[in-house]
Image (tube, rainbow, N blue to C red; front, side):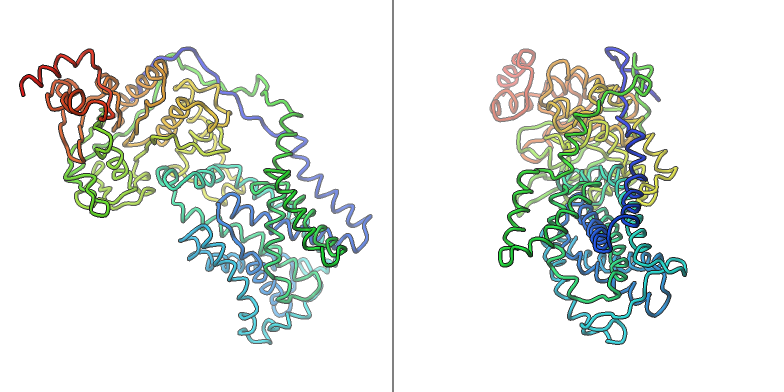
Length: 629
């Protein structure tokens, strides 16, 4: 089923600004130039410095992924680094001396150590993970003492690691540097593909707050653990390469100072930077080296430099690069690249498979205070059910119960034939429940198009591997995401805002963007929490048209709204809550003529109800109802 709604004009969605061919060629040219210079010009001393910078850049990229994108501070990098170095070193000495195989072993062992350490810390999140991962670094020497000395050398270190070899061919120091530069280049490309994708959008959503991610079907814990594991991969690569550097691996190389250096480089580069991690790593590496020239003031000079750099650079080197790029390159797309959404006069909304919502005898108490008491009602597909009542009557609490944010003290909630009671927020969303919030939940650093497309992340998933390698499945889903989001933005009159930062839009526009995101999920049930608040008259008319279209497309809509005039014009069924209990339910006309309703919202409860009633059309009935009393 499709339904038509009015639109002002046919609209176009500007295409994304694509990367130039020169920028893509830089992925080949820059590492090739570094390798050529390293092998043909620089001395062995500078070859070593370049090698160490690549290792630190790998560590910084892993820290950026876990901290800058997933929002979890991982101070246990030295432990994962050590695990990769010792595992690959043991491989080189006792099994086979192959650097490529060592890279794989180092990555796998680093991931295992990181996940084992991260599982308990990620449950608590925040500083709990930082502290627990910090203690992991302190455990490195004791753990090495417990392992038999003939395996890893104990605290004395793993000695006698052979020269690097690739597929049985002696690579030497020069070959090791080539491998390091190539691995760093490939990893940064994979890292870029991961964060500049729907997974990157999911990570930005994750940092917006506790409610938004589950409402979109995203499990914060699962997503963080996945990213935490991926972030350990470059750390393991660095460990496997480090094992060849001096043919020796010792515990003194994996101290807390290494974690602080990586964190400093991440701050200088920008916590969500990609290419700038090389610059951050190089600056910190050389500052660490040359700060020793200040003798006893070396650490002070290093610390002052980092503080000054952090304050002056703001978002790091990457932020400066973005500003420079915006000034240098035009963001206007060529006419041939503009995406045109045809047939938007009139606009068609796709069919929505709405399911009946049944709330049965639901009670919710908070520390002995009853917020909802034995409430029952239903919402049917193809209808708008309005949930109204005074402030504090339990309307938003009811939405949070349906949404899985709260657990019912008693009663059941079902959608279609499936029960929602007891499910988590992300599980409820995956059953087909989408919602908007009283305060629009719009993450920073996302365009309007990306915000709307985020409604499809959980319902149409793609794997991290497919995303990083840009496999066909990822490309198909990305194209569908952009097409669906573009059509919905056009339907809501937001086509020209497609590539604007969504968080900077006006309040009313952000509300419409949230509605588009909810529709993008193709939901069975849409929960709207004061969706009309902050909209002007024209925006309310446009909103009404979209909601009517969604209703006629088959959606089940539950609308919490204080404006009874809007409710009367839109709703098919009205549920009235008061003091956490069901007061009335029926058609808008029946509710409007109820003496109890009029007394609550125009009589004794006037001014505190929080619900706006059309006084002109209802004053006479209110007075009549009071006379009857």
